[in-house]
Length: 307
Image (cartoon, rainbow, N blue to C red; front, side, top):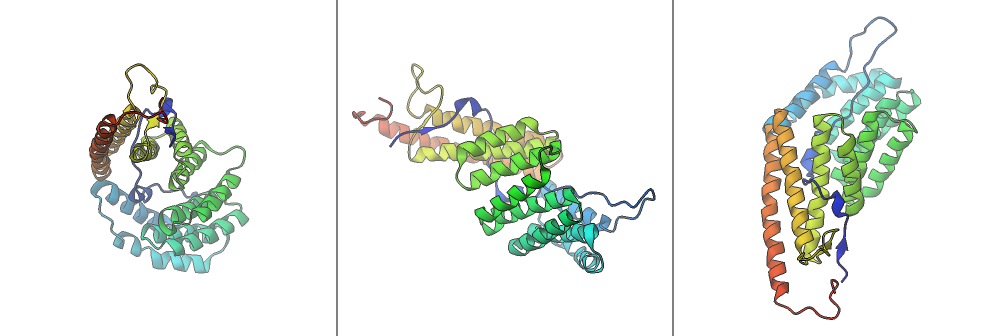
């Protein structure tokens, strides 16, 4: 079987993306206003509760649905009593709570309703965030990759030809995650690297690093079946599994970068998870070394892919 080809110049960083990390990349809701007179935001308490939930997870690793539960009755009442953009924003918050508490099918329905209503009300930012939420509910929850791709395309259409810098980042970052979920590892790595390049904040850079690492670790895992080939593979002295070892090293380097960024933000639980992912790759390196040693004892045949 032919060796797996990947772009070595891209192998510069890494870290494995887990579904739990998907919990904490939250879309921004547009601020409510009315004319020139500032009005109280009816979603303020719900947003505060959501932020507390996310912060608690990032700092301690604790998932506490009780932090979100208190917001649900008020959000349901607001959605029932309002229409247009206000109802869309209330539904977005409700759908986000459903997604964060693992009610993924319900979340996809609620968020899609929010997206349609927001688009009809010209609240395009809310519609964009809601479609991204639908994509994530399907990608990480229902495992319906086709539905996730459709939701992502809705977000692309809403962003149009001139997305904001944040929308551009989110579209590329989530595209990378969808590609990796479908097994399109090389495409996912390319998009993850692009998301890392354009990330404007440490938070975005952290999650882009996790995407990069996920892709690189998947490349390293493919070495269970066949060695990789990169731009260094045909240099003098390079052996069949050296590209696999480079993929592992690059993945560990990105885990380390992600851990460092998380620690600098005070997110000690995420930093610990990233360091654990980095450590887990030591076993992958051992498996690659064992395979290389085993194959070194077998004479290369005329059909060797490296001959």
